[in-house]
Length: 171
Length: 171
DNA sequence: CAGTATCCTACGTGATACTG
DNA sequence: CAGTATCACGTAGGATACTG
Figure 1 (cartoon, each protein chain N blue to C red):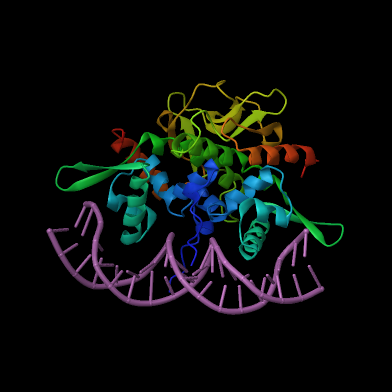
Figure 2: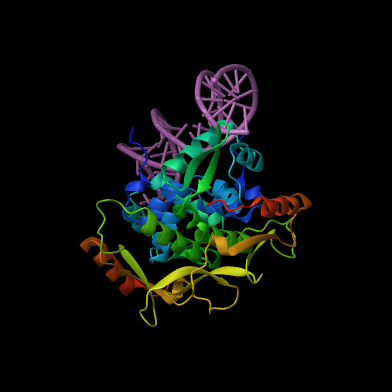
């Protein structure tokens, strides 16, 4: 039986990226990580994912160097973003932008997206764009903040608020 | 058996995006489309994908409105990018950038990436960046050109050249 | 709290052969 | 050329129960 082609060995960097990020849950786990989640059970509840598959996905992400597993007091662990993981953020944001624009559901609020991402220092909304290399100051996930957009549910609103409080910086 | 959770119904736009793009072959099919491929057998050869699965993936992409199937003379067809499909490009480029930086293989040329994307009008290399919304002129896949980078194989070089010749514009 | 351990199923994938 | 038709397989995903 031919094993499915291993994209990690492909020449194309996008194929290799998808070997890590293309798995259905990977990006959603990273989404939570970007929003500040670090603990197993927090991922579990936020995603509604079975613990066995969450464990498998986290393990894969750690093996790929996107997250690191850090022991904290009392055999607890935290899953923290690495630099490699943090740099997924532009791709993530690009996907969010595309999803907002092109994958809206009929029942979605017409007024706007569920989450708005703004520059942390100025509060201005940000976007992902193709630009001539080196012409704009680099901005990372650390420079931005997720705010509840017009379409956000009360539950999401609360989640985002508690997050910003907890956030000591999960570097 | 509970069907796997349908990401297309999720609240998160990224989840919905991944319902379409997260499937392993989808992005690679789009890669070829971005590089100008439109015909079934051209996708088949470029990707080394089995015809049945290519057919299934193309069908899904058409259903999602990312490609359109256009009849041309002599029961031939072309798969052309829609606006929705073209706007995947920033996300694609972001993934390429990340793959180039973080998923390099040991045997990769240390000198640079296999494909370099440059602004069509000026020849300057481009990149994807997070910017304050509305501060840069929007650039699309039509404004850029893929060139063989330092690490490109002769075969790839030739593919890119013939592409740029063929390219009448697959809108 | 942070996972393992089982068991199960559907689907994405693959090879190959065939058709209008 | 542009696919469809079979058949088969592995594995991500899921439910649930259990452990240090």
